[in-house]
Length: 491
Image 1 (cartoon, one colour):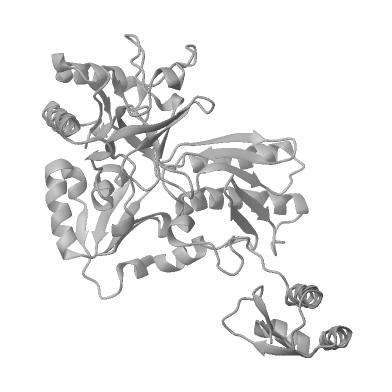
Image 2 (tube, rainbow, N blue to C red):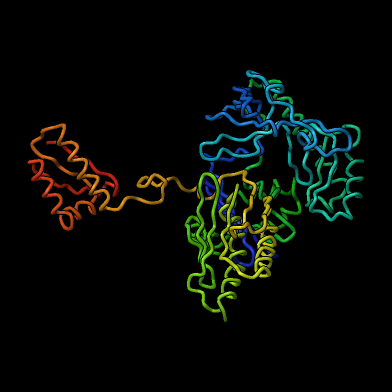
């Protein structure tokens, strides 16, 4: 599928859009003052061990301590086993037997801080190069699962010969499939030098120090986002184009060949109305071409997607209408997950389908669309309640969490009390105050809608309360107040 990458650069922010056949599929944003931490290597200090949670908090020099779970503590595997953590067949060694408070420990960030949660760590260090991923603590040599199985054995043999006696674990990335031995050898040398610098820094720097910082977003575009389908990489900054071209020619020459400097008068994101797509991706409702729509709700625990037919009545019968809406929704949901960078547990409520073959077709289409996602996803079948449960690996904050903050009016609830509910709260509060104090007058300061209600529909109730407590009640409209805010001033 033809793909173009557009890069909008500014000193304060870098934005990257991946466009396929004119439609935006992914958005990546990195702010200069809020750069992500995934891939960074730190010399941490164990701040606290929690045996009950089988985890430890590690001080890596950030405002919040990072989190290390026992499952993310690396163990050397026996010969012939792939690299990784404790195998399913072997019990995990308790965290309290592996780390202790005050211990200096080298760790790598595998998940950015999200919300109130600190960064998640691993003790297995992995360094990504242009063609290879280096696992310095291991000796396993492997090949990406995305490379056809018939080629893997030959590629593994080639790579093992190049790794030689110096050892270290290496995994061949998908874009290294057709690389020459010389290119692979250069990448091996580069990764080993990087690891040597990290180890040297670990001996010189105190705990809670940064040892290695991963590439910035511009450089990660060439390393991680370019695929065989990428036609062009257009960037709107001459300075960054020159810098990225120089970096690419040295480390990712094939990707660098696709770099282009955008010289148009229109902002580069206007070419595909990307700012409009960003605005839509921050909303709950997603319109479908058929007239149906999705409602996407992101919460702390999970994300829900509800599919609705809306005004779609184009099919000959109701079953066909539902089936076609769900098919279109399956494609749209997969795109929205990428576009919004939604991760964790996701529940999809497709419209109920009576026919099993319709359910099978919708699920097959959904899984097909999810397979295009570069982030790991797993979708189950339809549950007894007709829901599809799935997971999408979460390493960075979602688009909404990065660009938005909780509404100050509703404090993130998504709803506010009606003006009438607030008016009745005020009446009760005045009655409560009258039992404790004896002012000359009560003044209600509230939002315009609440004051308007007291002057019109609720005027009788306000007058009745004034007569009951024997005090005048005056009103003051305050436009700066939200609908739920009010003050009762005792004069």
